[in-house]
Image: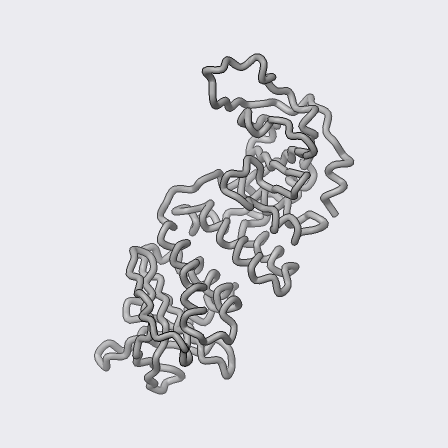
Amino acid sequence: MNKLIEMFKDLPLPDKDNNIEFSAVSIEKNQKHKIGKDVNGCPTLLIAIGESKSQSLLPNVNLRNIKVFHDLECKIKLDNKLEEGKFTIVTFSGTDVGLYDSFLRFCEVLLESIKDRLDRDSVAKVLDRCVKLFKDISKPPIKSIHGLWSELFFISIAKDKIKLIESWHVNPEDKWDFNCGKLHYEIKSSANRKREHFFSQEQLREFKDSELIIISIFAERNDSGKSIEDLVNNIKNVIGNRIDLLEKVYTLCYKTLGNSLDESFKLKFDSHLASNSIKAYNLNEIPKISKENIPAQITELKYKIDLERTESDKNALNKVLK
């Protein structure tokens, strides 16, 4: 379990009768930043801010799911002692308590980004990414859960995980999941053990001096399998000090899952089936409709292709996997 989640759950509610705003605990020994619980029981990150050369006022944020208040004087019950101090306060204020854990996971990543930088302007820039993420967390998922799981599974079993994360959804306009320069990977998942996948005509367009590999994976629910959270934790262990990549992984997961985040993050899929079923296909082998046979009036085309009888490319798969 995430460290901040454990710390938060052990905190009592603050005493409203004595105007105590937060119960809190220091995140690390001798560290000024704290994890807290407000009078409504919501998780709160209290970031200690030092003196800043800038005198500009930073705007507070008060949205549906998240609140940020800068330079706030707070009364805190810390280790059974009452303290007062000035902090930047980040609170998850949404009504879905199931999202508390997701907020706290991301806070741990943010703290790594902040580290000991106590300059208020630098902290504000880091927190802005948190605000942008959680203000849209109520939107519907932008792809299937097993689709995201399959992309993370592909990263988790790859030789060069760092390179794949760097190339993962680099631009919103990309037609493929991984853009590694002259090499692209498109991950297609199936929840019914059939290699029938949807493609857009644009995805199957050939480009000069570039190669597209289609990766087909069976992703089937299994309570003894691995969850998205498990895969993220595995990836986290090999990222090392690349906090930018860890933040990217969480951001893409949260944005992709949207309002299904709470339940989806813990859903488990059969990793053994996925490992045994994974196949790679070269674009040249994929059956498709040639451009000459598409009327000019049709500007967008999407269709399902059965790859079961298409020859797979073992060499392409071996190049990227362990």
